[in-house]
Image (cartoon, rainbow, N blue to C red; front, side, top):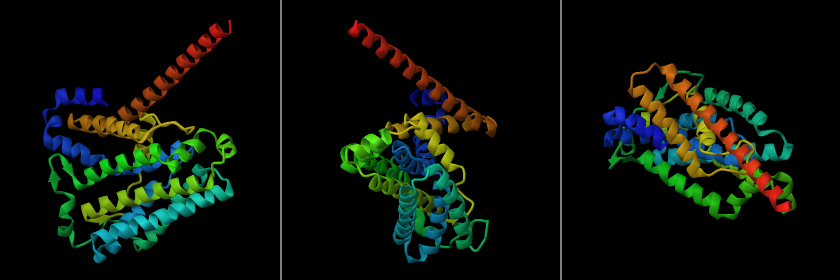
Length: 308
C-alpha cells in the first residue's frame, strides 16, 4: 500500500495535498464499508455475494424514507437490510447450503425487489431536499463525515472481531467447522450474525452514498462486490476462512484505491485500472502461495531435524 502510494505521489503533486488525500478517503467509503462485512463472512468461511443488490435496495429505501428525516432514513434502511441478512444467514444455516450458491439467488431476488420498489424505473431517482445533506460533504481537516464513519467502523469491528467472544466464534467456524462444533461453538449464531452485519453494512453504504449524492438507482452498486472481495484478498483474508483481520481489509482497500486513482490521474485509459488491479491481485495470491510453500518446507525440515 505504501509503495503504491509513494510511486504515484512522486509523479502527481496533487496526490499528497490535503484535497487529494481527502478525495482518496472519500472514494474508499463505499467499498470500504461493504468490504468490512464481506471480510467477516470470508473469515467465517462463507461469502455474501448479495451486497451490491442490498446496497442498491438500501439506496432506494433511504430516498423513500428521507421525508422522515436523514437519520431515520439511515436507520430504517440499515435495520431492514440487517433483518434481510439475518433471514439469509438463518436459511444458509438451516438448509446447510453453500452460501455462494444461496447469495447468488438473493443477489438476483433483491435486485428485482429493488426494481419493484422503484416503480420499475431504471434511471436515477432524485429527491428535492439535497441541501439537508450538506453535512455529509463538510470537512474536518482531510476527513468528511463518510470517511470518518468508515474509520470508526474499522476500529469498532476490529475490536469486535478480536476482543469479543462472538468475534472469536467467527474465526473458529472459519478455521474448522468440525473442530468448532466439537468445542461447543454454535454454528447458528455466528452464521446469522455475519450475514446480518454484512447486509446492514451494505445497507449503510448504499444509503450513505445515495443520500450524499441526492439520488439512487435500482441498478447501482453492481461492481462494488468485486472491489470489496479484492480488498479482502489483498488484505490477507483467506478464502478458506479462519484467517485475516479488518485492518488487513483496510490495507487491501487503500492499495486498490491508490492504484486506481493514480492510474486515472496519469490519464491512462479506463481499462488500465481493471488490468492493474487484476494483476496486483494475481501477484498477491501467487506471492502468498510461495510464502506458504516456503514456510511449510522450513517447518518440515525443522521437524525432520528434531526427530533425528
